[in-house]
Length: 240
Length: 245
Image (cartoon, each protein chain N blue to C red):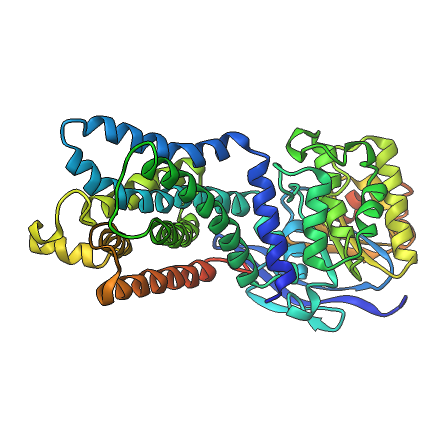
C-alpha cells in the first residue's frame, strides 16, 4: 500500500466553543507509515485527530480517509482510535474489556491474547482496569484499538507517562505495524519522539508549520536536534 | 443492528454489575426491605397495606432501573467509552437494546424476589396472578431504564444524575394515584398526571391487584407504557451523537 495517501485533509476549519481551533489545514498522510503529529498541548492535535476519526463537527473543509469521507459507516471497522484519556471500562478487567470490544468487532478470540501480548499486559490481564496504574490503563485502551487490526490507527499521545523501555517497545510495535501496511498517526508533545516517525506534522496554534520527514526538516533548518529545528521554524515564522 | 453486538453489550453490562456485588444486593433486597417497613407502618391498618403494597411491588423496578441506568450511561459519556463505541461498527440500537436486555433480566430477578417476599411472609394478597404483577414489574423496569437513558444526557455529573430521582421520579409517584386517587386531585394535577407514564404503570398494576385482570382499559395502559418506553428510547438514541462539537 506504501506511497498512496491514507488520509487527506483539505482546507479544514474547526471551531470549538466559538473559537477557531484549527485554521485552514491541508496535508496528506502516506499509507503504511508512521506519521507523528507534534506540537505543544493546546495546539489542536486532539481536535485534528477527532476530525480524522470523524467524531468532530467541522466548520469547513474535507477530510478523506482511505478514499472515504471521514466518519462514514464503512470506515468504522477500518479505523482505530485511542483517546488520550483511557476509554475502557474501569470496572471490568483488561481481558473482559477486550472480550467485549472483540465481540463488537467480531474478531477471533486469539486476537485478544495477541493484543494483550503486544501491549505487555500479560500479568495484569485479569485485574480490574480501575486498579491499574495510569500507564497500564493507557495500554489497555491501546490494546482494544489493536484488536480489529484496523488499516488506520489514530493514537492520541499513547506514550505519555510510560517508562522509557516500554515507550521504545511501543514505537517498535508501531514501526512493525506500519511495515505490515497499517497507517499510523501518532500525536505527542515531546519532540524527541519525532525521531521514531517516518513523517512529521508540526502544529502550533491550529496551524501547520511543517509536513516532512525528520531528515528533510533537519536539512531545511540546518539543526541536528529536532526540537531545535521546531524552534527555528517558529522563529522563522515570527520573523517573516 | 447485529444480534452479536447487542448480546455483547448485554453481557458486558451484566459483567459490570457482577463486579459490583453491593449494588446487586441493594437492587435485590431494598424493595423487599421497604415493603417490610410498610407492612410494619400499616400495622393498625392492614387494608391500606393490601391496597398500596400490591402496586408498589411493580413500581419499585421503575425507580431503581431509572437510577442505575442514568448513572451507567452518564459514566459511558464521561469516561469516553461512549465516544469509542460511536466510532466502532455498532448501531445505536445495539447499545440501547443491549442495555434493555441486561436490565430486563435484572428486573425479572428483582421483581421475583420482591414478590416472593411480599406474597409470602408479608402476606400480601392480590386478586390477580402474581405472574402478571411480575410481568408488569419488568415492563416498568424497562420504562425506568429508557427514562434514565434519556435524562442521562442532561446530567454533567453523577451528583446531578442522582438528583434527577427526586426531580423526575418522585412527582410521578405522588401523582400516579398510589397515594391519592386521581379523581380527587385538582384539575391541573389530573391533567399533569395524565401526561406522566408512571400513571399508566400504576393503573395497570392496580387493575391486576384489585380487579384480578387487566381488562380492555388495562390493556390500553400497557400499550401506553410500551409506547412511552419506545418514545423515550428513540429520544435517548437521539442524544447519542457520533459527532460532537
